[in-house]
Length: 136
Image: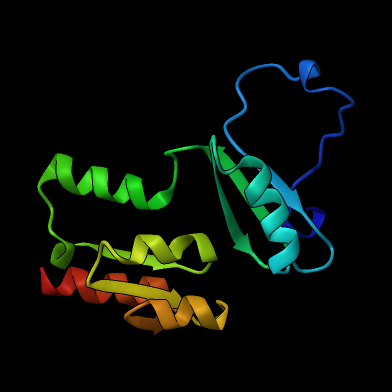
């Protein structure tokens, strides 16, 4: 976590936390494999959304909380089509989001599975956004 600029907070009991818990991230120094992911998925998936965000992290959120649902909701609220939506992603949990956009971009630094799931691959998001703004 420190490598990502985050300071971990160690607690002995979740009752020590103040406020709402919106996401739990489980981190492993080793990459999660199918067996270790299955353990957490089987334990939590009946009542929560369990997703690998990268090979070392699993995120657990409320059952219907994920990026794909948020994109779908925004598209519905503002009557925006998939053809008028641009999605950028680099993590496994972004793959579902790509399905809501014809213009889905995986970052060059993303895992191969993420890149295969996107329509396009880019190294530079600002350049793509500048190109889009020129077309408008």
